[in-house]
Image (cartoon, rainbow, N blue to C red; front, side):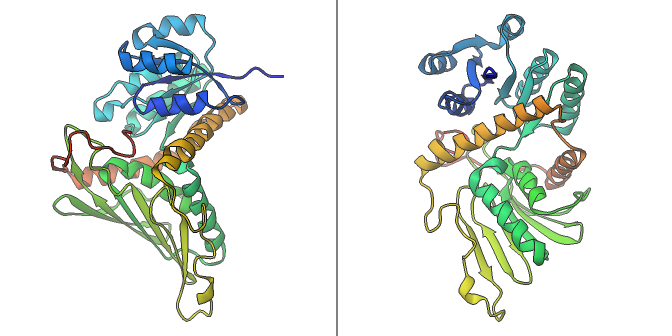
Length: 338
């Protein structure tokens, strides 16, 4: 029987969710350690989960003496003022496969991909939301419908903070190479980006607001999608909800409304269900995919996936600076900060 792979989690804020998800799975990879800055948060997390606690300063020496197969880097990248890129490259240089949370500048992604290639390991940027079960359900249902009725328009609602994630999901809904640029109309705290994706018009309505002291606080909407076809529309209202199907009036198919629905048909998940079931399952799926790529020697990213992030950067640059606001509460809970 093959030994369980050893995985470490770098970051004790959102990384705590990854650590808990891995620790709760007795049949998956083994959580070996939590890596932090030496503060109480990471120490208490490691104690609660019964694993080692390493500091980022001692990471190199620990890697020299401990067998580590993969790492989740849930620390902000340099594009948002964090040290995530540097930490990821250090792990890759030691031959450790890395799953790093987006957003990451494409320049840094390319550097990490080169190191992974040179050391024979895998680097995989992680959008997170694309592996969640409700989103995967929407992607599968869209593929079923568009196999017979091609998409004639896609509408996306998202925000500055999760635009990159929404673009990744969009790329799994629409086939073909992504466009290189989009036209962007800028408003006060909003932007509308329009582009043509291999013949399918795409419009993105983007909230462009930011609280400098709490960047996650204004992350709304996370993302929603409407895929229009000549047979009807598929909609995912939010990343934790059900897929709905509304047939085109006059097609004789009106009684089929919502027949394709249902991550859990007829219900919307509670916050507890999202954070205790949907998120952990998605996190474990992301780590499993990384380890599978490592075992098969498959690259962590394709040129098409990189092209999607180039488009994200193009839209972000054309949006300009956000509208700076103060969130209603300084301790505002967001989906990514809880």
